[in-house]
Amino acid sequence: SDYAQAVAVARCLQRSTNDNLTGFDVQYLPFLIALSEMIMARMTKNKAYVRAGNKALKNLEKLTKYCSDGSWISRIFLIKAERDAFEGLPEEATRKYFVSIEKAAKYGFVHEQALACERVGILLLDCGQADKALDCLYKARELYDEWGCVVKSSMVSDIISGRKGSR
Picture 1: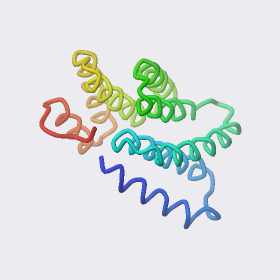
Picture 2: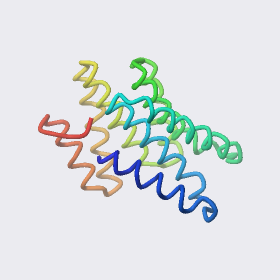
Picture 3: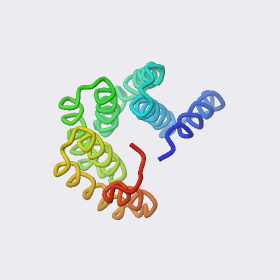
Protein backbone atom coordinates (compact mmCIF):
# COMPACT_ATOMS: atom_id res chain seq x y z
CA SER A 1 0.00 0.00 0.00
CA ASP A 2 3.02 2.33 0.14
CA TYR A 3 3.16 3.15 -3.55
CA ALA A 4 5.64 6.01 -3.12
CA GLN A 5 8.11 3.51 -1.70
CA ALA A 6 7.26 1.06 -4.50
CA VAL A 7 8.08 3.73 -7.10
CA ALA A 8 11.39 4.53 -5.41
CA VAL A 9 12.41 0.87 -5.18
CA ALA A 10 11.37 0.13 -8.77
CA ARG A 11 13.28 3.14 -10.11
CA CYS A 12 16.35 2.13 -8.13
CA LEU A 13 16.12 -1.45 -9.39
CA GLN A 14 15.75 -0.26 -12.94
CA ARG A 15 18.86 1.92 -12.72
CA SER A 16 20.98 -0.71 -11.01
CA THR A 17 19.95 -3.78 -12.96
CA ASN A 18 19.13 -2.74 -16.52
CA ASP A 19 22.03 -4.78 -17.88
CA ASN A 20 21.38 -7.77 -15.63
CA LEU A 21 17.67 -8.40 -16.14
CA THR A 22 16.60 -11.64 -17.77
CA GLY A 23 13.38 -13.47 -18.59
CA PHE A 24 10.57 -12.73 -16.20
CA ASP A 25 12.34 -9.73 -14.62
CA VAL A 26 12.69 -7.97 -17.96
CA GLN A 27 8.92 -7.85 -18.32
CA TYR A 28 7.82 -7.66 -14.72
CA LEU A 29 9.92 -4.65 -13.69
CA PRO A 30 8.36 -2.30 -16.30
CA PHE A 31 4.94 -3.54 -15.15
CA LEU A 32 5.70 -2.76 -11.51
CA ILE A 33 7.15 0.63 -12.41
CA ALA A 34 4.26 1.62 -14.67
CA LEU A 35 1.60 0.47 -12.22
CA SER A 36 3.23 2.14 -9.22
CA GLU A 37 3.71 5.37 -11.16
CA MET A 38 0.07 5.44 -12.31
CA ILE A 39 -1.24 4.71 -8.82
CA MET A 40 0.94 7.47 -7.40
CA ALA A 41 -0.35 9.85 -10.07
CA ARG A 42 -3.88 9.04 -9.02
CA MET A 43 -3.10 9.42 -5.32
CA THR A 44 -1.10 12.66 -5.62
CA LYS A 45 -2.68 14.24 -8.72
CA ASN A 46 0.87 14.71 -10.05
CA LYS A 47 1.25 14.38 -13.84
CA ALA A 48 4.97 13.66 -13.54
CA TYR A 49 4.07 10.18 -12.36
CA VAL A 50 1.91 9.67 -15.45
CA ARG A 51 4.79 10.61 -17.73
CA ALA A 52 7.06 8.09 -15.99
CA GLY A 53 4.29 5.50 -16.03
CA ASN A 54 3.67 6.00 -19.74
CA LYS A 55 7.37 5.50 -20.44
CA ALA A 56 7.39 2.21 -18.51
CA LEU A 57 4.13 1.18 -20.20
CA LYS A 58 5.70 1.71 -23.63
CA ASN A 59 8.62 -0.50 -22.59
CA LEU A 60 6.22 -3.17 -21.38
CA GLU A 61 4.19 -3.02 -24.59
CA LYS A 62 7.38 -3.49 -26.64
CA LEU A 63 8.33 -6.53 -24.58
CA THR A 64 4.89 -8.11 -24.75
CA LYS A 65 5.10 -8.31 -28.53
CA TYR A 66 7.34 -11.32 -27.90
CA CYS A 67 4.83 -13.01 -25.59
CA SER A 68 2.72 -15.08 -27.95
CA ASP A 69 0.24 -16.42 -25.39
CA GLY A 70 -1.24 -13.02 -24.45
CA SER A 71 -0.71 -13.52 -20.74
CA TRP A 72 0.63 -9.98 -20.26
CA ILE A 73 -2.47 -8.24 -21.58
CA SER A 74 -4.08 -8.13 -18.12
CA ARG A 75 -1.18 -6.03 -16.86
CA ILE A 76 -1.46 -3.55 -19.71
CA PHE A 77 -5.20 -3.12 -19.11
CA LEU A 78 -4.59 -2.61 -15.38
CA ILE A 79 -2.03 0.14 -16.01
CA LYS A 80 -4.25 1.83 -18.59
CA ALA A 81 -7.21 1.65 -16.18
CA GLU A 82 -5.16 3.48 -13.54
CA ARG A 83 -4.21 6.11 -16.10
CA ASP A 84 -7.85 6.57 -17.13
CA ALA A 85 -8.86 6.88 -13.47
CA PHE A 86 -6.23 9.61 -13.05
CA GLU A 87 -7.49 11.39 -16.17
CA GLY A 88 -11.05 11.50 -14.82
CA LEU A 89 -12.46 8.81 -17.10
CA PRO A 90 -14.09 6.47 -14.57
CA GLU A 91 -16.31 4.59 -17.05
CA GLU A 92 -13.38 3.83 -19.34
CA ALA A 93 -11.19 2.93 -16.36
CA THR A 94 -13.85 0.59 -14.97
CA ARG A 95 -14.16 -1.18 -18.31
CA LYS A 96 -10.40 -1.69 -18.48
CA TYR A 97 -10.23 -2.92 -14.89
CA PHE A 98 -12.81 -5.58 -15.69
CA VAL A 99 -10.93 -6.65 -18.83
CA SER A 100 -7.79 -6.89 -16.69
CA ILE A 101 -9.64 -9.03 -14.13
CA GLU A 102 -10.98 -11.32 -16.87
CA LYS A 103 -7.57 -11.77 -18.52
CA ALA A 104 -5.76 -12.29 -15.21
CA ALA A 105 -8.29 -15.02 -14.34
CA LYS A 106 -7.82 -16.63 -17.74
CA TYR A 107 -4.08 -16.99 -17.17
CA GLY A 108 -4.30 -17.87 -13.48
CA PHE A 109 -2.83 -14.66 -12.08
CA VAL A 110 -4.84 -14.60 -8.85
CA HIS A 111 -2.75 -11.80 -7.34
CA GLU A 112 -3.28 -9.54 -10.35
CA GLN A 113 -6.97 -10.34 -10.37
CA ALA A 114 -7.11 -9.33 -6.70
CA LEU A 115 -5.20 -6.11 -7.33
CA ALA A 116 -7.48 -5.10 -10.21
CA CYS A 117 -10.56 -5.87 -8.09
CA GLU A 118 -9.16 -3.76 -5.27
CA ARG A 119 -8.28 -0.83 -7.51
CA VAL A 120 -11.65 -0.79 -9.32
CA GLY A 121 -13.38 -1.07 -5.94
CA ILE A 122 -11.53 2.02 -4.72
CA LEU A 123 -12.43 3.89 -7.92
CA LEU A 124 -16.09 2.96 -7.55
CA LEU A 125 -16.04 4.13 -3.91
CA ASP A 126 -14.59 7.44 -5.07
CA CYS A 127 -17.38 7.69 -7.65
CA GLY A 128 -20.09 7.08 -5.04
CA GLN A 129 -21.00 3.60 -6.27
CA ALA A 130 -20.73 1.89 -2.89
CA ASP A 131 -22.66 -1.30 -3.72
CA LYS A 132 -20.59 -2.09 -6.81
CA ALA A 133 -17.42 -1.05 -4.98
CA LEU A 134 -18.11 -3.40 -2.09
CA ASP A 135 -18.72 -6.30 -4.48
CA CYS A 136 -15.29 -5.68 -6.02
CA LEU A 137 -13.59 -5.24 -2.67
CA TYR A 138 -15.10 -8.44 -1.26
CA LYS A 139 -13.88 -10.26 -4.37
CA ALA A 140 -10.41 -8.71 -3.95
CA ARG A 141 -10.26 -9.88 -0.35
CA GLU A 142 -11.37 -13.38 -1.35
CA LEU A 143 -8.68 -13.51 -4.04
CA TYR A 144 -5.96 -12.21 -1.73
CA ASP A 145 -6.97 -14.93 0.74
CA GLU A 146 -6.83 -17.53 -2.03
CA TRP A 147 -3.37 -16.28 -2.99
CA GLY A 148 -2.32 -16.46 0.65
CA CYS A 149 -1.62 -12.77 1.19
CA VAL A 150 -3.08 -12.10 4.62
CA VAL A 151 -1.66 -8.57 4.79
CA LYS A 152 -3.39 -7.38 1.59
CA SER A 153 -6.59 -9.17 2.62
CA SER A 154 -6.51 -7.25 5.90
CA MET A 155 -5.86 -3.96 4.09
CA VAL A 156 -8.88 -4.54 1.87
CA SER A 157 -10.94 -5.40 4.95
CA ASP A 158 -9.93 -2.03 6.39
CA ILE A 159 -11.08 -0.28 3.21
CA ILE A 160 -14.37 -2.17 3.37
CA SER A 161 -14.92 -1.18 6.97
CA GLY A 162 -13.99 2.41 6.13
CA ARG A 163 -11.42 2.61 8.91
CA LYS A 164 -8.35 3.25 6.79
CA GLY A 165 -6.59 2.19 3.64
CA SER A 166 -4.67 3.47 0.69
CA ARG A 167 -6.76 5.14 -1.95
